[in-house]
Image (cartoon, rainbow, N blue to C red; front, side):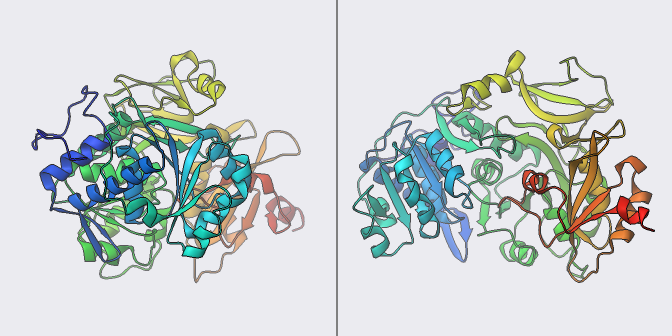
Length: 543
């Protein structure tokens, strides 16, 4: 297939154009306008927009050769690489639906995700393909498995069941793919949420959602052709796709793709490639901030970092030390980015102000709007078509529950100030209640993380003998430091209200995390008070 002619180089596609507001049209536009311009750097290899189009087109033709039709689901179980981009975009060109999966998943959870989404094809790195093999009998929709970087024996030994193909079999196709006629309302991906309170839910995302999220990010921090975005988060995560890769494509910027985030390599990488932007999540800022200060801390080209979760203390300290501008927002896979700051309108501790694409409301437990300064659950509604998820895949009851009263219920508590800035308080399921007081785990963690010997922490509730909760903190010591639990508790007594001070302290080598650096608190809650946990009440009683 040859690209459509007549794409205007001045602008991609305005909101409201159903046939143009798609990922294939964006790729086609960028290839026609900037075909020879460098776009991607990965481990010393460089790719232009024309290269990206050609790679994706080969994957699209290969998938159609396997019988993949418009709307079919294709799972990706792959680490970061140019091949991941080729597969993601090739799936889109073929009109199919990408299902990017966390490479750490195994067993029942992986079977659930592949089964609920109805994947007909799995493309997996050789390192992860063995996670799929034992599940074949539980996946009636699965027709093909494509193995990347696998030897010939791995593929040949599987021919007695579902066909296994080499990645070359998929991409060494000189034929053209057939344009399936995708529009902005067609799904481009099924993104699975964390599923900490039940089975993981697959959010079905339309093409216009992906483009609008990219546009919101690019506009908020004014990306342009001279920018270079450093993308070190896993591509199976929505952040790396719609908040990094697509903003780069929409703005004509370059992108550097890393295999994974490394605090030790981060600043050297951005200096070498001339990167001007990076998206952070989780504890990345704290990890970078706790490295030993050096003369080269400000010797880098990064002008802005976009993310969420930087507490006021971390926010100011990071900007002061490294000389970058932090821009924070609030989002979820299901809803996109309804709140975001800009370099000219931001506030430490705030996730920004509403984006005009959404109606936003904070409500109490009875669904009534709350006043400024009062925490309430964040509810969202879109003002434009196809900029939020369509449904939870094969879970109609969960879709209806999330959209009760015709508002999407985020499950997050936020507070709004008099100037219209919003601040995240806590996940409602992570909130604690002790001695009649509501406690934000986020605020407890921020105070604990300020202790010099702490690398990172996670606050969780554990049942109290007298009802409500006790506060437990799981901490990872900072490298080269000895963590004294009594000294940490004394620090907490000076940094927070008495009712917030943790009773239980567990010192751990590492916190359980997803590959996107999100702490898996549900695992910590399930383990509860372990044999190696300090009970500060017992310590006091024995003194």
